[in-house]
Amino acid sequence: MTEPRRDVTGGRGPADSLEANELLEVRDLQVVYRRRRGLLGRGKDELRAVDGVTLSVREGEAVGLVGESGSGKSTVAQAVTRLVPVDSGSITLRGRPLSAASGKELRDLRRELQMVFQDPYSSLDPSMTIRSALREPLHVLGLKRSVDVERVLHTALDAVGLPTSSLDKFPHEFSGGQRQRIAIARALVPEPTMLILDEAVSALDVSTQAQVLSLLQDLRRERGLAYLFIGHDLAVVRRMSDRIAVMYLGRIVEEGPAERVVSHPAHPYTAALLAAVPDGRKDREHDRRKLIHRGANPDPWNRPVGCSFATRCPFAMDICFEQDPQTTGIRQGGTVDCHLQTSGATLAGEVLGDLVADHEHGGAEYAS
Ligand code: SF4
Image (cartoon, rainbow, N blue to C red; front, side, top):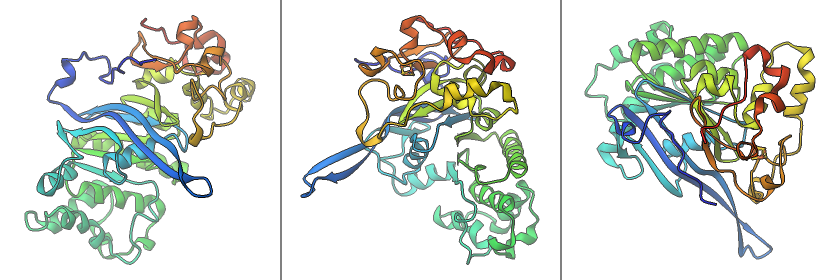
């Protein structure tokens, strides 16, 4: 069955999607891993780590990409930053294709798009001073001669709330939260327009995480930065995002305005992620378990026919094991890939129940 093209423009029409403020555009992205099979290694297995992902980020916008480990969300980030090869699809920044760029054009594009990784312990070389670590992007991007290096480093450290005396220290002299601030400062050094934050607060304890999230919100407001915020915790992703895309086994299964996705989830997997957010309510355990602890993840090397979530979905129907669900528009904004929309069921009455009462959840209304 051919799926209609997903509207990734957040409700804007096709004409509007060509507005000048479109920053990053990913279309039909495929990243496939292959391994040899059999004693002689003549056969080949394929794992579609990213399978037809389409999303866009406008200038100054924060888009969240949420899913469990193995959903492919970090591979999307790695493909955008050219850390993994792309099998098909296109990635453009301000309309310029990233895959075809080289030389000065690639350096210019890379300057605009910086990445912050999950692990502040391994992303900083322990043998380098903070000054050297912060100067590195200027060197890689060929900017050292065109800027006042010391001023740039001081400004970046100041932006993340660290003193300039940090420059002559080594990473081990800082706490985990401070190291992640340094990683953010390094990303800010080239003065990018967009940050890709790949599980950037996941390794931090809860209170440090809250401080770094506040810092990121301040930086976005002050500098007009756009974010692609990648995480597995829907509550954290919601706090940081204007729009959210939910990934499962390499595909986006639901996307839309952040408030709609969280208050009116349309896909059972989104509901399961929501149920995984702790709220201290013991009386909701039954509903939580109903949504979370069911079935096993399918083998990504042997993707099942039909909906990939069917083995875990409490609402799987026969059709779910036979056909891929189509992409359907949601009246409150965004899209979902789920057969529930053709069965006439909604998530409100049948899935979420009391679990979501405090969040004023109701089932998403399908546009067609
Ligand atoms: Fe569940 Fe079917 Fe929807 Fe997949 S398509 S999420 S199995 S109801």
